[in-house]
Image 1 (tube, one colour):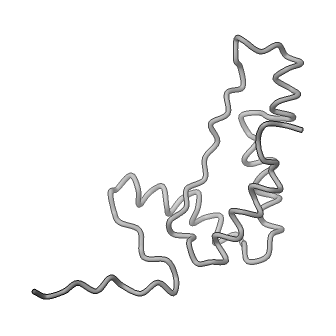
Image 2: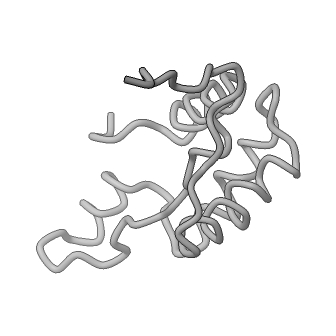
Length: 106
């Protein structure tokens, strides 16, 4: 058992958020450290099995594309459109099906 959710568990959660209409509000990143001085190589491999700098592209995204409701367009939105919008300081659209906030005119 690792202290983190498996790639399959993380992908299932991400796919559920996509199917719920939240694609435009999601960012995908990879920030696991490949080298930690206080862990031995054996400990690192046990805690982060198979991790590398290309883990997201070689393992996570191929699995994500097998999830129902996730296609190449979704992945492009997650990896290109959403980061571009965030860095441009453009607000994300509301999730699908969410009603706009109604404010009292008074």
